[in-house]
Amino acid sequence: MDDIKRTTAPETRNGRQWEVQLGASPSREWLDLFRRLPDSSATIIPQRVVFDRETAFFKSDEEHVELWIRSLDRWIAATNVRHATTVERERHERATRIDTEIRERERIQQLNERFKSLQPDAPAGVNSAPVG
Image: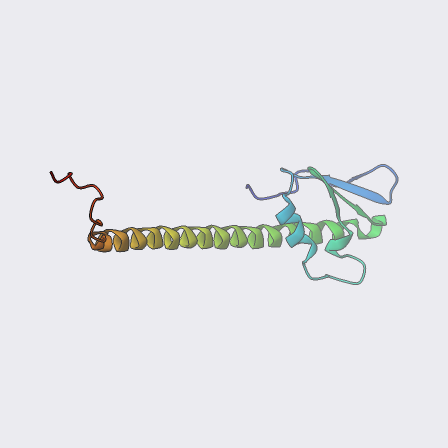
């Protein structure tokens, strides 16, 4: 997934609710990481940002819009780093798990090959030519 970036200046229709467009729609995992960011202040906090596809909304009086935007940009950047780290860790864990499973299958196959000569002798009359 590409990094999420703000692509527009904030816009409002009523002077209280603001929105910015994003370059991509954040994934559920990205949004979860964003919501778990630490608060910056008592009122300007990541949990008050609402995302709808490629749009982020927040409520603010006009005196605090610039602070919200600086905070939002910082939160987005931090979340991008955390998301990339999480994705890489999960990729590494998955690759390690697959390698372990492959090695275990190979070990089992080698064990089966090693001991296949220990077949029991066939009982009399089984697969033997009739005497006569």
